[in-house]
Length: 453
Image (cartoon, rainbow, N blue to C red; front, side, top):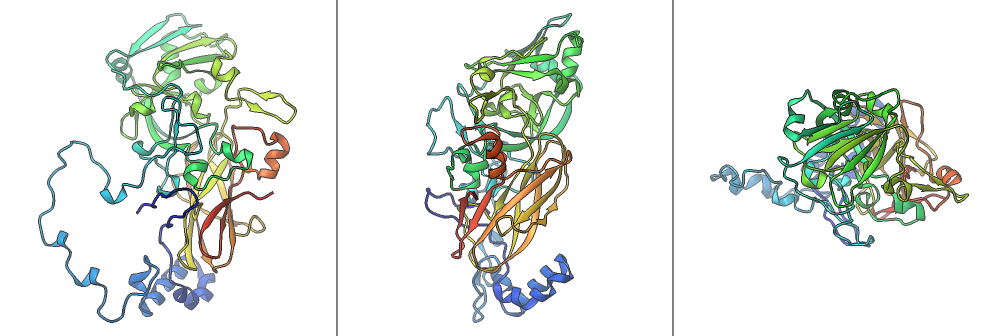
């Protein structure tokens, strides 16, 4: 089910996966027997009290007459359905029409230089559907004819080369799951701007299966000079000529891809069709879209997109340049800002964690603003430089609660609080905010975005 999108200042329903309060009270003492026994007993008690069919509604089923949705045979069980979809490409249910990327009304609305945010709070698992993948454009998107697109390799190579898309697709390919996060994701929170939902606070984040050719394969075909070639400049074919420096150390690991496919199909135009660079763990601006050229050099290029933009302003007035790695981070997506808990009782706290340095090792969750922490369950698969889904059982007592998540990656790095981040970075940054996110659950069930000082 989707969450109804509403204007700022109003609220929306959370996924209604809770157990009626009377059922929880009956079995709360049995929680110590383990999660499965707890949930099984809770549902059994709910059914015994006549509430089993109402768990998803929050209201008891009328004892008299029963549930008409069960007793009355629906039309779809009595007649013929529709035939094969005639448009040739499947679409979501009409009941899911509110699930979509959205632009923030608080940002400048310039079509050619804009952002649309992924609806993290309404997604499941770790893969972002291609049609909901966040967008960031610097000069608008293009639908480029792949038969005319060319990919060039030059610089410190013996054989400067040009490849067509068809030629690239003939080479041995690999497919890998990776997250991509804009360096400015959660950037507004640096300035104490509490945007209302997880979609707006963390939605410049997505995760896909990417298919393509390792860039090192193409460089080796061109006779790359690995002794002197320490960096690569990647250039896009859009109007902004997006250019970014990529360290050769990332490329020789084989992780960096020249990708042509995403989630089992060719890239979408807004995601860089027909070619884009995939640089796992590195901020999204380095995943150059509409990729047309890479140049091998012996030093960082300090291009316009890394000498003027995408730098971190530190408290002493200096700028931190080439800070490309996306450090360990997490966010609770349910319950989260803009949602409403309809009643006290059992809930599944769920969210996403990721690290640009490898795998997520653990995620701890607090419901009291960080005073106490419990270890969440990590759903498999847990992959390197990929989103990881976590879950935690929670019985809400109807009182105010502050929900947080704190991720730790395999290097031992622990996600910091705002206080820890600001002590080093100040409050004038835009990029690379990986601070712990706090959601305030109020007594009326409404969830708000808050920051703890």
